[in-house]
Length: 80
Image 1 (cartoon, one colour):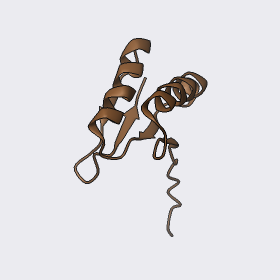
Image 2 (cartoon, rainbow, N blue to C red):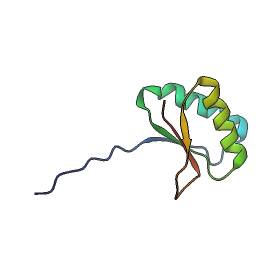
Image 3 (cartoon, one colour):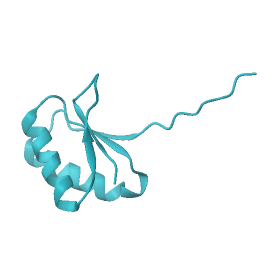
């Protein structure tokens, strides 16, 4: 008998197509409105500047996070 493994899909914010100023506002709104549902993913793409904007917001509000993984470093996972 196979057991159903339910994988909880993370809530995501995709910042592709946004300016850095727009990304800052979107990131603030997203993490503050979804802090009850952590972890969440913020898709930054490979832009170092976009990652910097997101890190600044997360650091300002005191969120813990990891940047990407072995296969994909174009996102930031917000943990708490």
